[in-house]
Length: 367
Image 1 (tube, helix red, strand yellow):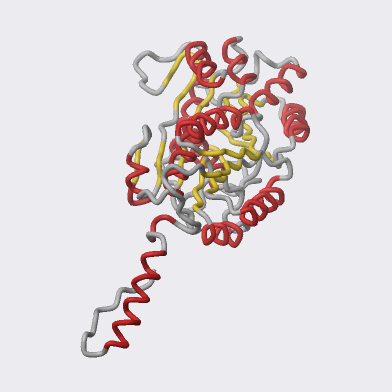
Image 2 (cartoon, helix red, strand yellow; image 1 turned 180 degrees about the vertical axis):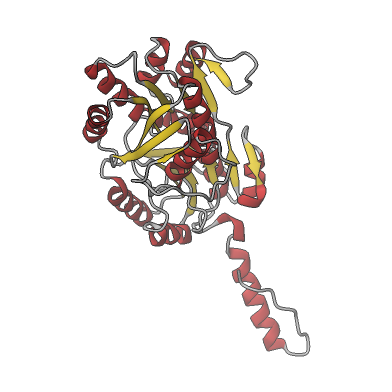
């Protein structure tokens, strides 16, 4: 921000300088709005919504983004990279050259993408969704508390295998903050630890208590063939495996395929994350125990709603307060509660929902 200087009437030339600085200050944007230009309130804006991978999870978010685009007069561009962080970088650089009015992005690697993200934040309005980068200059984050969601997933694992046993975790990568936090939440809940989101168990090390053993975490880099191969390899190498936990949307259905191929549906329980169609159908069929879901529709909707407002000079905090989620002002975040989807939910558990009713509502939003 350009500082405001007092007027010195006895020095006219200083007054002229002060006036010039004041005029420049009036042309700059408020500190909370990030880079980029402000457009007229009736002018159409162009906004980008960038994911980390191609997945049905993001198709739900796309519908929310498109709905907000119609409501808030925005041309919404959806990008689902197939080459992970490298393609994200190419997409962002191209958008900045074209003069995009705002970008919402799922961050794959905060440290590795720090320069790219801060550069984008200097030139346009930048927010994050699903996976955050709080140490960058992003304006806000829209998603869930991934550690709390991991804790919920861990409790679901204990419901699935109450007698204990061996567990393997699966996820795209552990560079993403959301993946690390989800994984740690699962581990802490399963082992009955006091919650601590700063804790981190190194992959490759077996962690256990007297009842549960978490063998490892397999990462696949969003390579679906590798994800399926990892699941099959686990079943082959660990004959006493009791539960497989898929932390990215595509993992649970691929785990289910591997379990079916091995003929071990009666032995191995599957617990998932997100609302992939194959996961929901698996729950209906009694082949997947349950899944923890987010709210991708609202990630898309709120991302575009907020970016459109910022592009028109509206106040960030005011825009964030208008959410259906929980506005955590001190952290510049909007959080939506994680929900557990099961075939037969516990009627006393407020965060558990019946799978067919949930899927029907999801279809209403997206079809």
